[in-house]
Image 1 (cartoon, one colour):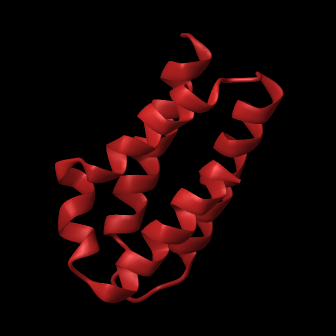
Image 2: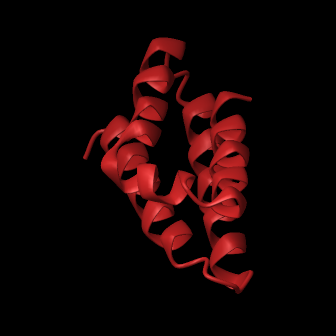
Image 3: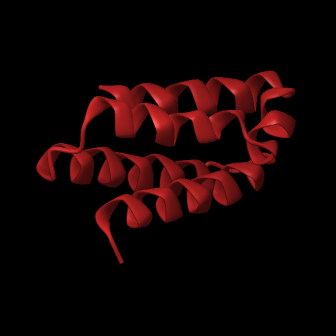
Length: 86
């Protein structure tokens, strides 16, 4: 599997974990840990900014739209996106 496929797969896992954040922090911590690993992988592999931008565009996918309607979960998504960019 190519690195980019691994990153996309990880983002999908983060999406699923974030959707389960109904009240607990365990899933949230797992999500942040996973997305941090994803960001670190992208830095180590020197993945281009345009590739990262295309990955983060997945935050506009149907998986994330429903999450963004909830303010608390929306804040979580913003933090995840920032971890990818920076």
